[in-house]
Image (cartoon, rainbow, N blue to C red):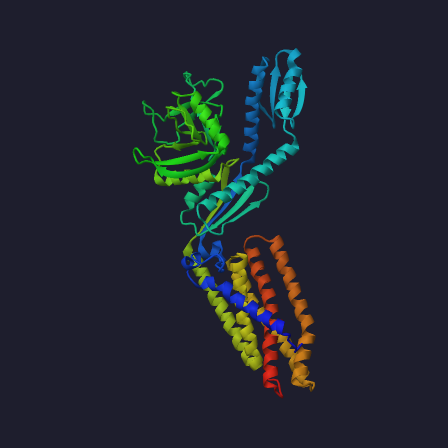
Length: 524
């Protein structure tokens, strides 16, 4: 154990040097690190919500709304099929997890079944007395719910990334809930508004039919204006009679950017379709020159301009009395994509940056006091060997910080507690070795023999103690959440780095001193 191969010396020193290199970005300003070349390490330790402030949100995805929309779309499709096949029907509507329709002519019931089957082969069909019921299977219902949550998770992540927020935590909780933690958010209300907005954009033609007595003609819908201040001539909020048929879907959008209208300088949103969407947009505008064309966002009409000429470039402009902030947010939402289901905020907590600063200060005090106490204790108790252990302890702190930077693990207040615990555990292995060396000296061994026996006989105990603690840390991370995981991460990293510094670095310093000084006694 007192022999150290040259390659081992180089490896130990290289690891220590890399630790310093990867920790260094945390000691300089972010502006400088962002301007560093890509080949230079620039990752920094990510501070959690409790250390830098921000917003904590628990969201619920309205998965039932997805199923409802799918069934309503099926109703519209069945209506079209029945009319095209000249099948008289009545009572068409949504029932429990399905759609029902009564065919008046018994001779055409089988034809109607085939038409409905052709719309969706996954439907379970049943028929009784001419009334056909088409229901979604349990598998389809489950797939729809899971798909809605997974897609919502991705859209939420895209929207937060578009805001330029660093290191957010976005996790699924349970069947239909999403946990969102965004450190450093200065405007939590804007964050909530952006996450809750569905951003489902569609393009429709207006229905010219008159609305009498509040009755909406079949195939149309009455929608309010997007801008609440938009009023009709009689002073009441403006509404639009819009055809239900979606001429072009917002799913075809590939880009949306805020800008200003060249004519009046008002904020607008410029959008661009993909090839397929651009062709559909061109066909619709070419066939409907002179007619109003509604741009609808979440069932509210943003604007309904008259088509002056065909729009063939696959791009367009949305204007609707936006402020600069609203134009920016709408462009962000369109780029990130539409939510498949409505979002409800179940829980909201905000942590101020002042509280986070207090937590960091308290963590620093605890770490420094613990570190100084351990350093003094080791020097007083073990002399020169205690100094070696203290050097290894400081290197251990460097390696923990470097590991957190490289892994981009989020450091939380419980994580700082894990570091403080690691400070004490880091010298535990050295204490075991030094006490064993003392015992060997009392038994009359020479310095080299005592050191060799001390490391050889203590190594098993050191490994056993650290491995059992590491297993506990892994289990805490696997089954815990939030703060528990933060504690587990720093504890696990601290265990690995402390074993390295105790078994390799401290032993290297002791062996180097033995070879150079060739002492007759061990000052331990």
